[in-house]
Image (cartoon, rainbow, N blue to C red; front, side, top):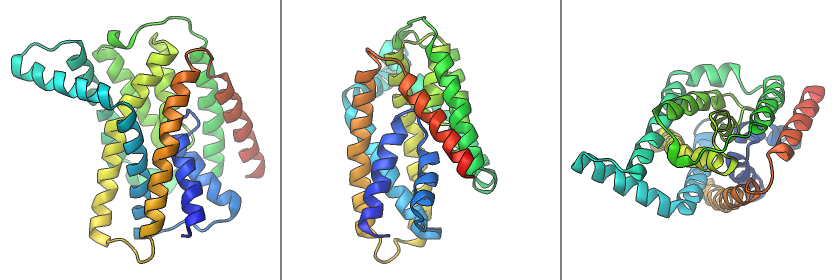
Length: 268
C-alpha cells in the first residue's frame, strides 16, 4: 500500500467513523471506486489496527476531561458504594457497549461472508439514513444526565446494527438516542462516548492477529500515516458535528446517504 492510499483511507476512516454516514461502508466503496486492491490477510488486519488506533486517539483526546471525570467517579462510587451522576453515566457507557462487543465476536464470520456487498451497503445507506431523518424530527430534548439503564441498553442494542456495513455506528446510535428523547447535541455526545469501548475493543481484537502474524514488510510507514490522518480527521469530525447539531439538523447527512445509496445501487 502506498502512502497516498493510506492518507485517503485514513481521512475516510476518521471522518466517517463519527459522522453518521458509515465508515465501514465507505471503506468498502472507496477502494472499489478507484480500483484499488485492498490489503488482505495480515496486511489488512495491520492497517485496520492503525486506522482504529487513530480514531481511538481522536475521540479519547477530544473527550479526555469528560472521560477522566467519568472514570474517576465510577471507581470512587464502587469504593464508597455511592455513585454520583458522573459515575453512573460512566458505568452506563460501559453497559451500552456490551451488546455490540458480544455480537461482533459471535458474528464475525457471518459479517465477513454475507455483508459488505454494494447492494447491502446501498440499501443500508438509504434505509438507515431515512431512520435518522425520521428520528431527528422528534422534538423532545432530554439531557445526557437523564440517561438510565433502559436507555443505555436500547442504544447499545441499536449499535449492534452498525456491524452491518452501511448502517453507521454513530448514525444508528444517534437515531436511538433521539427516539428516546435526547437532544441532538446530547445524542451525538452519548454516541461518541459509548463508541470508545467499542473502538477500543476492535483495536484490541485486531491487535491479537497483528501480534500473531507480525507487521508485513513495507507496511509500517503506511500504518503510521493512516493512523495520523485518521486521528486528525476524527478530531475534526467530532468537533464539527457537535458544533453543527447545536444549530442545525441531521438533514444534510440524510440527503447525502440517500443520494449515495441510490448511486451505489444503480452502479451495482
